[in-house]
Image 1: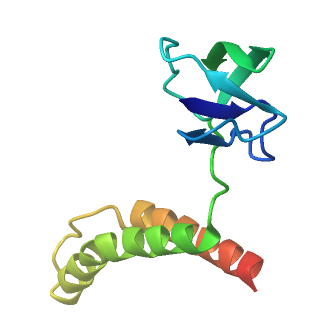
Image 2: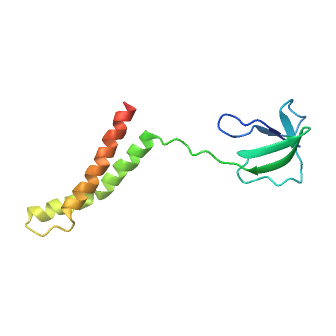
Image 3: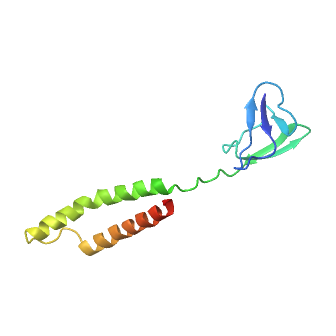
Length: 124
């Protein structure tokens, strides 16, 4: 048998367990023939007399963004465009035309650096 705690946890999920005896008050058995929504255990539970009568789709919470992860991603974006800066520098040194729009490239990269600085300020 599968059991689910009728009251949701703080994050919106419901505790559940397979097998054994009913865990106690506040828990209900999920009938074997009941369809389980894909959002399980983030579901809406309706129960009567210790038996689930309805499980409907719930909302899976979106994790809070992690500034450190975003910083790593932004630094990777900068590194991925470093070759464009190098090619522009080489072209300028030999008097050739620039292969990229340096102003647009600078503006894009500066926006990334500004965001990194903003995030690093949040971490401090």
